[in-house]
Image (tube, rainbow, N blue to C red; front, side, top):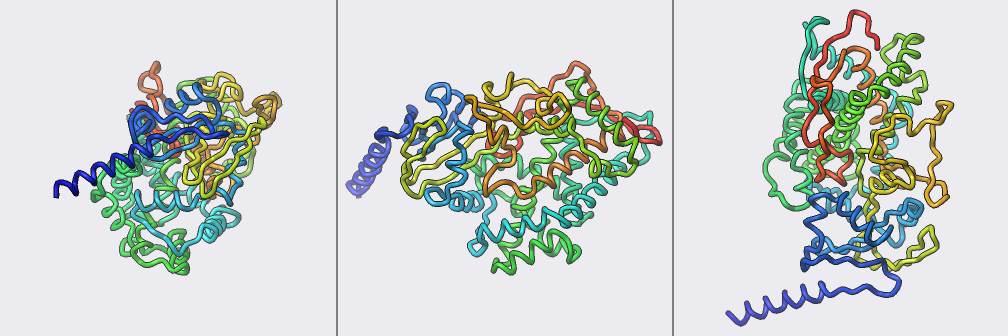
Length: 476
């Protein structure tokens, strides 16, 4: 028995040693394995992916391979070369990585649902007439929730709250009512969702046991609770899954996936946008001036639907540039020679992962965006107040100056709905509330570094604000 155990240990050590002795081959990107066998750079990556990858970029340049928990990951940080990854459907695969994450985070398997069918359904739901219907419903829900939360308050009565809590709570409930059309359990769903969202990063990285949060949310989102209209977004999603051959249990679990993907970013994005406005008075005044211009012409609750808002759009783009930290991942299914925009070519190995991290470049690249750490509300505006979309790196115009919504075939299909929802929420707050920081000298909290790679980064703390209803006639 002891000899069997000894042989197994020796075998495992041999495998670890062999795998740890990977060397850089001819034409491959720089290889940085880290000091720890198997783990490599995993600890630094999990702690603060942005800081770690910035350090690697400084050391190795725009492309390099690192070892992270037994995986070899090639990171590409040249935005002019992104299309070599985004447009490749032969040498690289996205589906396998997605399936692993769905199983790990949501205990969800959808083998009968193809990526093409799912994307087609999403595009139908978030474009054209369907998008207009959802946006109208979202606008109405934001309006009613905002006013109902302040019901009975007088214009002179101030309320106090954390800005992040305020934004996340209101936008989540409005989104839930819009897509799932239930009112009686919205607060309970929000409460359980926030617990789940807090632990999502650990779940994705296999550092958390299963627990009961998902089970509770499955129960809240199940068909017994959601007897909504047959024309609702949620019921339409049920029908789609049923037609694709998904069993009832996986349909139930898939609702949590959709709840997270549709609601996890809007609240945090609205927090940062309003936080930047409150801490940058010149930006707040520029936006209020723009809002005054078109509210004088349109007194409906949806003037944003009828008038262009270049200042508002620039502020949102700048907010997302500073806080949207998505990671775009592919798995190599064949060896490939990747040709960079500068003419250099690198060999990528089958079985490795390839990652794009737009937050680091282009979004925080000083060659592209001057003083990238600083919020500039007019960064995406030309002098004539038109949208600025021409940015350059190495004297070459960039196709992707920012990528908050992903790109290529995997770009977020619900991005227009999200943008409309965030803008409408901020518009309502600025036109219906007096909003100010409790401490005029307060600073925005730092980011929660461990959230890098999971959409809009959340704050590590909150910004205390106070607010009250404006007079009878909303104004800015």
